[in-house]
Length: 217
Image (cartoon, rainbow, N blue to C red; front, side, top):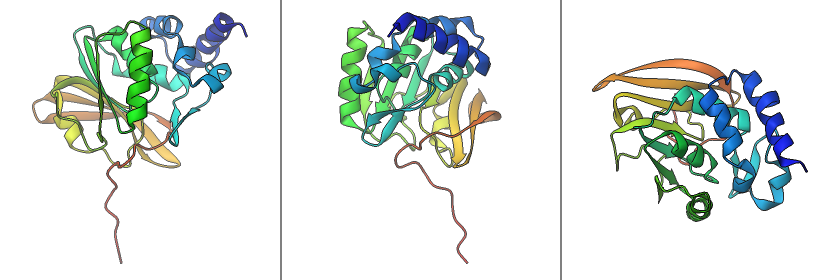
């Protein structure tokens, strides 16, 4: 398998056509070796336009979605970022290249351990990994300049916007199958946020995500 040709095809045939035009993001998709963050038995699928199983019933997002989320979040060099759902650590690695520090949380201890090893192998030092349930918020190191949820939520917990610094952004996929929407929330000032829908998608939910209230007759 020609890895570099496969990487080029991933960027030019999947990511760029999906309205990812930020050159910083495109360069990152070339620079960070995605195949190193994929479970070894699926290494040949590292550049495929699909979600990849990573164990514990979880999956790795498709490359074009990772790139689009990164573009919409628009991390800056001084940003402190919260990532909910470390997974393999690939998105963590991408974020670390654009931000000052990334705080990443996963509910699965094995994901935290393996991501730490992968990130260390890539020389990533501006990341703090925690194991815990952050589906309803993670205020431990708030306020954050940016927050990204790598799994969907039926409703967005109020704790997330409340953890943003003024000017901060939050990217989350909100809704239930088959209708979900990637949403960008921006903190205008303390306690005041605006939200805009970006695009439709459908991804696996975060474990223990808050559920909408159901009417019972």
